[in-house]
Amino acid sequence: MEAIMDIIGGLLMVGGACFLLFGGLGLIRMPDIYNRIQAGSKTTTLGTLLTLAGAACLQPAWGWKLLLIGIFLIFTNPVSAQVLASTAHRRGAHQSPLTEVDRLAEDREGKA
Image 1 (cartoon, one colour):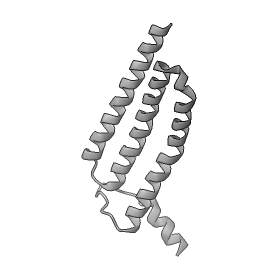
Image 2 (spheres, rainbow, N blue to C red; image 1 turned 60 degrees about the vertical axis):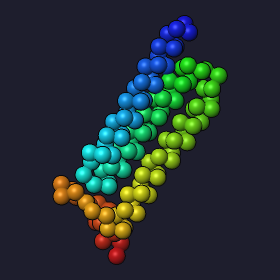
Image 3 (tube, one colour; image 1 turned 90 degrees about the vertical axis):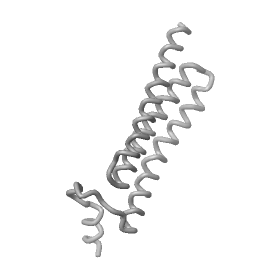
Image 4 (cartoon, helix red, strand yellow; image 1 turned 180 degrees about the vertical axis):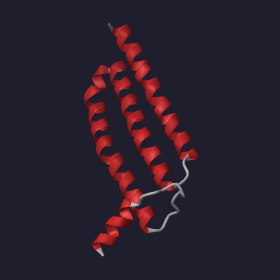
């Protein structure tokens, strides 16, 4: 049974590392700051959660601590990405020419 948990834990950690690698590539390849924020926040959230799940399989005694870290990450990572994107929009950061809809600008025009 322990050997199976080691294999599952290793696969989860490799999967998490792959997602983190793809997030790093997304930061380089995306055309503007908004897409980079999305690529960075989504992939790091999933990559870190997979890595934490793999660590929990390898060290079951750490399970509750890793679960609390994962819950904290689920709540804070999207919020920080939204704050960064909102601040970038407010400061007039460049948008990709492929951007068709700007809902944040529409919302701000509606409030004015």
